[in-house]
Image 1: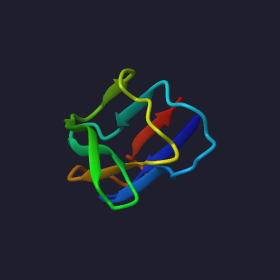
Image 2: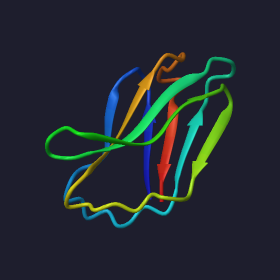
Image 3: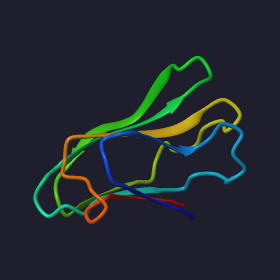
Length: 100
């Protein structure tokens, strides 16, 4: 299991290319802000910076999104990344990401 607390509007690498972290069975994204939504782009990126989106969505405050299908990919070809925009992200109200 891997965990991340994303505290600002940014792009975060969740798994590098050639990662030995194992296959992805689920990804849980939780917006811990009580009222403000956060916009999330979860995508795979190849070595030529081509992006292949898994999900592009807005997660309302105090809401979780659980992804369980279509998450397998070639770890030798792609990097798994997430971009966050908008929302009131901070150290006290992060976007919590759990990969299993």
